[in-house]
Length: 302
Image (cartoon, rainbow, N blue to C red):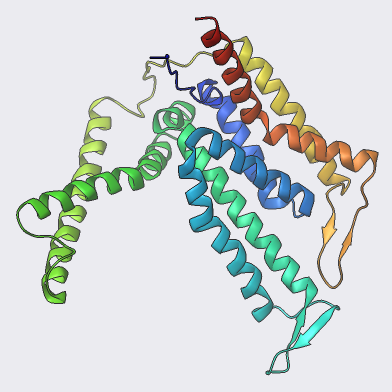
């Protein structure tokens, strides 16, 4: 039987500071750059990274949540915003439907979907221990709360599945019986989950307090080391961030929707900023692709 090696996310193995700075840059630029080309770059790269790390789960998440949000925003915005000079038709209420409002709604939908995908990648890479490592000494209380918040949803979901299975094993299946019967079981499950959540929060707080978390002068063990690889990555991110901020200052990503569509034409300068944005967003994808090529080369020699 051939040896099958599952390739891990190489980018997640970098220092937490590198991971956090990368996501800060890509999420920040995704929320501020409204140029269609820049939005397309960010959306495609977020999808590629998610699919590379999660496989079919990322595709299903995109189709189930991101695509409907994009379409809903594109259709909802013209119903409330009637700005723009390119009138396509008039609603029965007399308000105009403009091309600019449709395009702006689509742009807003792409931005929301892109940020959602980047946060999915963020939650997978920036684990609670990385977050506490980065901010535990600066803002200990806030970092602990944020760390608990980030891990609460997956942990709550896993506990909920366990409670539902336990209730089903004693004849309290939430999917069977009359409406009143299912409602009583659902209330019981909800009560159990609320109690579990409160107890878990208190236990976590007491545990961290007993370890001296947040006390002045407290030392902490860490498995993270900042090596030469991380230094190069940090310099790379610093260059990309500075270059793209410079591009925003000189309006290289300029794109206006109202009252009419106006944008900066593509030339050598603006294309250079778009290219730097592309290589920034593709950073983890390229690293994982290189790692996969290396593993395949090793495997072929076995």
